Image (cartoon, rainbow over all chains, first blue to last red; front, side, top):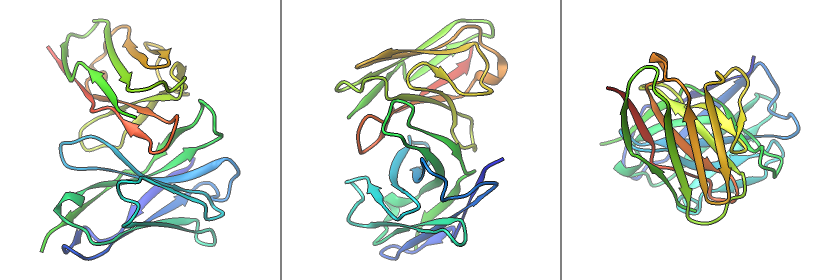
Length: 123
Length: 106
């Protein structure tokens, strides 16, 4: 069945760029109707949607992070990636990638999630 | 769109019927999902489209509502149901979550 796996450094220095990759296995990232998203959860806090990408490269970002976020896709590797620039301690969180079912209907949802990866911003 | 869950925490016993409420700051039709999260784990989808049960989720979970007021009900709590529950709106960007409801054993 479809699985997602996040990978990337667990420690990033303040002001640097956080880079994570999500590898999709058991299915194609280019499947119609499936988008791919990044979300995060600071320690002990709630969930925040970061952004979503379609395999064509169309992206949608949370305005609160838009100036610092870039999400890209590599269909040849069945991967999509997150870059978050100028990080601070406030960006310390568990980062999740997830499949985003998007039809522009009430059935839209994030149905399959990766296990998450903890990223700490510290010098 | 802000989502406000109530209560923020809840103590209950095995076998109890539990209801969690999610209120949206503006109408979101039925574009609402519910997730369950256990410590150290990713959220798990329970319900989408406000009331549609995700495949494989036990039927003791149910959802209702549309517009601004939504509920998640667990008809008879099981030991594995003690977790934190989140609602999420997908009516418009940016997608937002409620602050969570922590369900604890009494």
